[in-house]
Every structure is written in structure tokens, then in C-alpha cells.
Length: 283
Image (cartoon, rainbow, N blue to C red):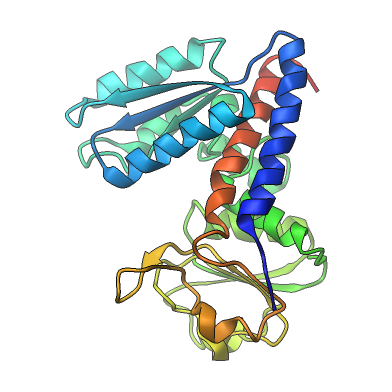
């Protein structure tokens, strides 16, 4: 069993982005990211701080718009319109979840697709579906980087994704499919789930249930990617996979924390760099 070090892979991505950013700056372009956060959700605050730190690390310009909890839809929409028009902002990200009275769909649809560095806009989702895209959703893109780092060839492998969310499960299946894996999406209503997962060469767990994937669900020698971020019965951070039970069965496995987590923000940096290049006509 080999543990896939998300911190090391993430660091390599950021170094690559920082080097390319240096080159862009010589051409007079500094990638700019705007992050909108509404309300005081503590988890969101932490994410936003980490995004600001990452921008600083790779040499981006970043601006945070912290709006009060009682911001109206009109005010939020107006801010998005304003950021769409700004030349110095290449990426716009609205931190989810939004307070209950706001419609996140409406906000995502307003972001100019070429500035949608989360790749949540229907135009970008459609582009991923047909395999002709500029941006990939950050978590699935990070998962692919982790799989590539193992040297395992995805082509022809059986891949099973547990979870069908729009943010991870569905795009994850598409990315595996684009690399010629045979993909099965499973979820809470799937019958004989453990039989299906036990046939997977590559297993991606993104279901949001602590230690859900047990040893009997994993094929000997499989690559296991754990996207989950949960707390166990002792309040300790853990994933969707029972790491201790599964680790000796698989060839590669991601830990939680330190696996998929660090990748998400690094891929956001990659997307923002790509957006800056496209908007400035740089290949």
C-alpha cells in the first residue's frame, strides 16, 4: 500500500502555476481572483482565508468581498455584474453555501462562464460533458492529478464513483470516462453496492458518510481516492473510507486529511491562471 501525498502533489501544482504566473507578469498580466463570501459561516471563512493565502503564494492579485448575512439577491447580483466587467479580475468565485434566502443557482448563472473558475456554470458543465472544456471543477480535477501521480494508467480500468453530486460525483465520472475508464456511478439507492465497488480498479468515494467504505467493498490492489471530509464518533477528522481497515488491501490510497483536500485550492489556482490566459489571448 502506498499513501498518495496530496500535500506534495498540490505543492507541485502550485509551483507550476507560480512559474507560469511569473512568465505572464512579464507580459503585463497578473491573474486576478475575486472571492465573494456572504455571512459568517466559520467553515466558509476558513476556506476563503486559505484561498487568499494560495493566491499570495502563486503571485495572483486577489480581492475578497465579505458581504453581511442580510445581503439581498439584488445586491449580490449587482456585485457579480460589476466583477464580470472588470478587466483585472479573471476569476469569480462565490463561496457556497449561501444564506437560505439567496439563490445560489441564480448567482452561478450570472457569472461570465469564462470567469467561472469553479466550473459550475451550465455552459462549463456542458463543455465538460462533451469533453471540450477550459475549466474543470476543482475537486475532480485534483483527484485526476492524484491518480496521475501514482503512474497508474486509467485507460481500460473499471472505475466506480460513490456519490452523484453536481460538484464531485458527476464530473468525476466524466473525467474518468474522458481518459477511457469504464465508469459506474453509484449512490444511496444503488443495490448490491459492495459487490459493484469490490470490482473497481479505481474507487472514488464522495458520499459524505464517515468510514462508509469498508474492506469488503474494496478490490485487492485497487486505487482508492477518498473525497469525504467528516468527523468520526470522537470528533476526529476522517473520510468516507475506513482508512485503517482498507489501507492494506489497496495499491494506493489517499489519507484524510492531507489527500484530496489540499488539491482543491491548487486546482482553483490552475483554473484562474487558465482564465487569465484566455481573457488576454495568451496560449
